[in-house]
Length: 154
Image: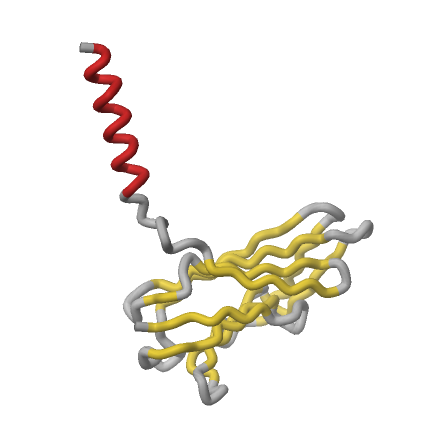
């Protein structure tokens, strides 16, 4: 009986691995390095439905020997723009944010991760048309280079 339970548990574990929702749909990322700071933008896939929620992860890694502090004029530290083939910004984040100074420091050899989740709709509620886009992710207030990702909206 124990052998049968063991075999069944192996089979079930194998089925779970085969049905993993991330299989064949790995993380899509873009990395840019400037002055010893490594900026990486990542999304779960390069293809989205227009009804999906866009989840963006942005990591700031300090490879220098000195701490690096990033200052912002408000609480919004991470931003993105969704740009169509005509180079038109069809969606952006953040919207207008009230002033409230903020900052964060990344120590040498450390990293900080920021996240954004947003529906695929612009400030007036319109949803971008299906097609290819550049998702440009960056620290707000000009604190980083842009990390471009090519994504497809279905």
